[in-house]
Image (cartoon, rainbow, N blue to C red):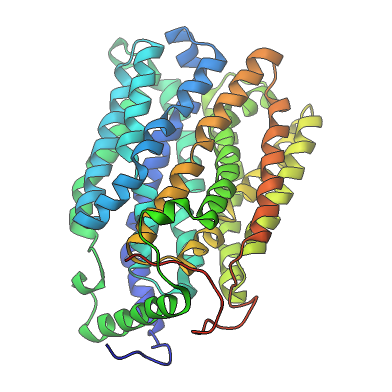
Length: 449
């Protein structure tokens, strides 16, 4: 094979075409996924009353999603690489939508626990699969912005889910069925309806994209191959299974664990916080208030990722928001009686939890390729999302024992401070922090055999 000595250039028009073809639909899928895993937070009071569960049990059941998610994350991502993104993501979307809709039919805490675990199994592999899929299409310098644009779906999902779920809970009482059952059924059915479109709209890689010209395909594939060869030449190799024990991968998983703890504490408990702050029983009002912080997060995610790509710096773009978010959590723990101050702090915390997404997921793609990328990214996400179990569980337990969730915020803050320090100590040199990668650069990145 002839090795290229300079990076092939890709026409910006090609990148724009790919973004418009792929990202809107991928964002729609992620919106559906996040609504179906997080809408349980809006129904907390209804579920506790209907099923006779306590706040601590509710926290446990909310986080049970991540038990199945953790177990099947890596196998799912490896199967995606085997069968192709198009077929495997179709399977994921259909099965999670079906399980989410089945939540409408539970009649006990035990049944809800089973459905939540199965929902996690069904959705496992979706997020890291999409992150891996994006590396098949976008050069490294585009990664932070691209991932951030995709992950704008997270705050947008809550902006949509809050008011929509609130309206359903307030007004859907058809056929003598509880409104919370209609919420799960309607929102789960939406994902099922999206599944057939995955087969039509998601080519597995650029070579199968009918909407790219042969010249556009050639220049993009040349650039991606050049970057892959640079990583191999600069870094050494490791198997897709050895990567699971890599200290760098474990460190990134711990960093992401702290983020997940904070994110899902917000997702599952912000509605109840907003309800107590606003002193209202209207699910619609609570939904609108819950959506507010995510409007700000949507805007700042794009700005922050664009700045990260422009400067080439990644670590500080992750560490600084975590540190600021930790400080805001501590302040909220002491100053939550004033509604305006509390809502402003929740907005700031939400922004700090979401803006590092793009820069963070640019880090593993700097040293992972091939099957090692598939298993490594899935393992980071799998281990880290145990924070989605830990966060709601600890907040629910603290609320039941103290009558308030605010003391638990200090635990989340401590995790974020630890994560911020760990990010800055990661041994990954970015273009802005060191020389451009060459064969003599003493990195220790990994590639699959």
